Image (cartoon, rainbow, N blue to C red; front, side):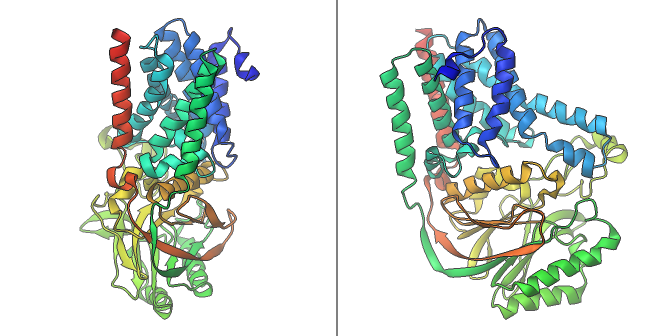
Length: 492
């Protein structure tokens, strides 16, 4: 690894920043999955050479700034292009958000720097522990979690059904530490052997059938309306939007038809009865059901909902994990002025649905529905498992324009398919509308920013992976135990 061996020593902070930016190439849509491991190995080498804890923490922060600055800069698009925030304010808000997210890699570096003799052993555990904290603090934003880059092609993705995305992250970060140890002169036979064991184990786990087919294959139709986000909520566009989705449903009938999140840009209670009747009849003619997305009012509250019509009794899923600053206003008394004066985002004061909602009994399947951002949280998806036979994600990533966001979101869905050993169906407004296999592979996908329907045949599955049974706790417990043992060893 001559490139890593010659890392600049005069400007380590700049090197860390560039390494973080380079890591983004490992995620979709570029997808060079070894890249985040190699860049993290570079950071670990820098941390090995860091003179003190303050320097090490700064290196972690610079890496995080590069990672998030390059990886989630698309937030600017939603704030400025579609949220109406002035350019300078949107750039500042995006920069501050990325600066906040960079605190978590800094935390990992600080924790790893507490160890002297066992630093390379501690750093992978510290890294993944910081990712897990970011998964839930302030409702969570685990977007650039290391493990996602391995889905589905990387051998380490085989750990997903066993330990979830954080288990994959731990395997990837450990490989980074082994590479750093090899470069820095540790016993190379042991370092190379460790790498081979991890990659072979992951490859072997990918061959395990974690679930089994149940029932007959099902024809599905996933509708992509390609409604421009800046026109979507204009009253004069409502009729055209309704007509677009009706025509798509009529032209591509299937026993299970899925529309995107908020496909119908008006309250469900205000959708014309004859229009709903037509959708219901299309589904009934196929002996199945149609899932439509619309905001919903119930008991004086507003929800982001997916509602079924067709052969089965109508059922509703209400989004439970809302996006802060996008679907609800945190600290409303203090921050309400942002929405009044700077942003023009609809549906910013929604109520969350119950966390205990069960799968829909539709189209002969038990369908676990999740909406947009919810599939970023694996421990929330498995709430409806192993009961569910099929996963459905309805999204509207048009908020992020022609950025990496929709591709990254699809890769996250691929990880959810791997963790649960279930088919994941994605119906989106502008992309990525896709059918994803239980192995996390994209079976079929519509071109982005086109109007159409993705039709295909899918299989329901039953069974529970270890991750479905136990969630994130085995991976996190393993990390805490490892850090505890290393700390005891360090003190002795």
